[in-house]
Amino acid sequence: MSQTIDIAEFQNTLEYAKAFDANDPLKNYRDKFFFPQHNNQDVVYFTGNSLGLQPKTTQSYLQQELNDWAKFGVEGHFLAKNPWLSYHELLTDKMAKLVGALPQETVMMNQLTVNVHLLMVSFYQPTKTRFKILCEAKAFPSDQYALQSQLKFHGYSTEEALIEIEPREGEYHIRHEDIYTAIEKNKDSLALIMIGGVNYFSGQVFDMKAITEAGHKAGAIVSFDLAHAAGNLKLQLHDWNVDFAAWCSYKYLNSGPGSVAGAFVHERHLKNADLDQFAGWWGHDKETRFLMDKKFVPMQTAERWQMSNAPVLSMAACRASLDIFDEVGMDVLREKSKKLTAYLEFVVEQINKKKNNCLQIITPKENRGCQISIVANGYGKALYNQLIEGGVIPDWREPNVIRCAPVPLYNSFEDVYRFGVILTNLLK
Ligand SMILES: *Cc1c(COP(=O)(O)O)cnc(C)c1O
Image (cartoon, rainbow, N blue to C red):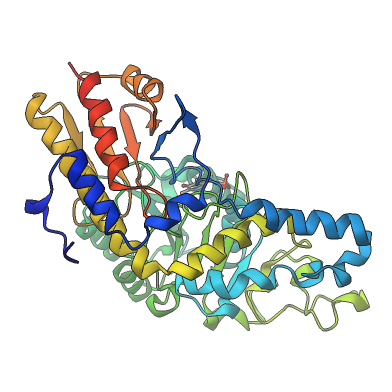
């Protein structure tokens, strides 16, 4: 199979899909995950963007910590095979590599929305003249609530201080030029840009490097919510000069429901002694942390935003997943992902030809990761329910979108083909 994606080569047949899978360098990884079953067959799981599947190794990583807890009690902080006192450090290098960060710029802690808030405490410091926040319209609800409540906390109304960039009338995704125009227009009052690296609804990928550059030129801090980008795209947070970012680990990163989240703070901010922050003991300089002194001395790494001691059990699950990602690497994953998603697009378009063009892909072709968002015109949520009954797990987003995210680690071309067959049979 050629390395470049030649859509002209694609064929919507089982034989073709199987041949593609046979040549897939990642074909053995599918077996490393548990698939929910439907009629004794793996479901077509297209929701790795919502909750990634469980690696078969996760259990043993967790079991290790449960065993050490049983064996050592509190002494496990020092005596466990992976001492809990520094357990979070075991995740740092691999996670940093995955998002293109330096190890000192990365920490795994808390949950995503919590991290957004904690980092905004430090990096959203509005002044009389510079107080506005720019985000994409239809940002994930939790991000909208976080931004609105931060504004309110600082005494601003959403109307006066939140700039939401919308798609133009009749369009589904946002034009980058409209983002740059808004940045330029608000260059004297813009304090912070906070955009989802990949919009959860449309699947649109934003040009994080260019937005960061434009934001900095306007004197703003630039940040990204990477919930749908981490483990999906190749990121280069350090080189792009992003100020801060946060992401969860349970979507593309397969670390289990509600698992520990990630945070990135660019190196240039780490040693800034003037930076305000909410502090907790795990952010204190680790050399003197246990002297239990009154004065907070921050770590000189992203760990300075840690507050509490690390949630070892969810970190164990995260470690299991990171070990797989580290073995494969984002370059190889991305290579397959482009083909897999292009194949899904091809299959959907083949179906469209037979079914009156009732399916509309609203994800931009040139700016996407794994996910394709489909509007099925003339069909409501019933179609989604029928897909579930038919052995596909996509997801539904109000008011009218079916999101499908074949992921390169465990989805196959045959999954895409089977999805097409099931979908065709459901359309009138
Ligand atoms: C999934 C998702 C969240 C979820 O936030 P939690 O704090 O993990 O519950 C937040 N923001 C975005 C953009 C998401 O996609």
